Amino acid sequence: MAFFLVATASAQSTLNINLSNNSGGTAISFYWTGDIVNGGAGSTAFMPMLWHAFGGTFTNYMKSGSGTYSLTTFGSMQNATTTSLLPIGSVDFESAASGSLYFYFTGSQSLTIHPGDMIDYIHGADLATVPMPFSSLNPGIYYQQDVFPPISYNMILTVGNVPEPSVPALIRLGGMALCVRRRYSFLAKQASHRGILISRIPQRTENGGSRRKPALNGLEPGLTLC
Image 1: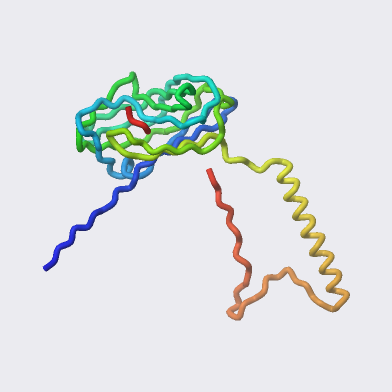
Image 2: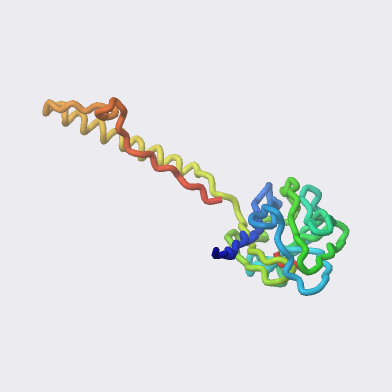
């Protein structure tokens, strides 16, 4: 009888951070995906360490300025092996280091991580608005792969809102619809002179169903441990 060992790949943890304009201030939200919210991510630390923040550098995401702001609605990072956890207490913006963004635990406390410990994230509301001027930020999408223990994960920072249809765009859309309607009316008149009947009723199939072209569905677009 033969036995086979099958290796199971872990789901890479990813931190998705979103910054958007809220009345001139900056609305912050984030969510984790991957192992860290699905059973926990295994520590890659080689020795016990104190972990007091997570975040990273996103080159040129800031124009200028800096600031540290309190957060009370975000979740907690947990050492699932020892069951100890610390809530997120503040966020730090820093433009001097090419644009860094870090989330610190409450009271600058540290979470002790040992080699082999499991780390997970406990959700909170994960949404808040801080008085950091949104005009100090450069809209765009920024990526970084974490290379610092005790876990490995990706980071994606999105700065800016998903654009809503503008008034000029809606006017252009309405104009296109009017042109299509006039074109249809013109064709209908031309066809009627030739004895051709144009109908808006969908063509029927042999089994009695309606044959329509399929609708085109629009697709909506939108840490370094230390």
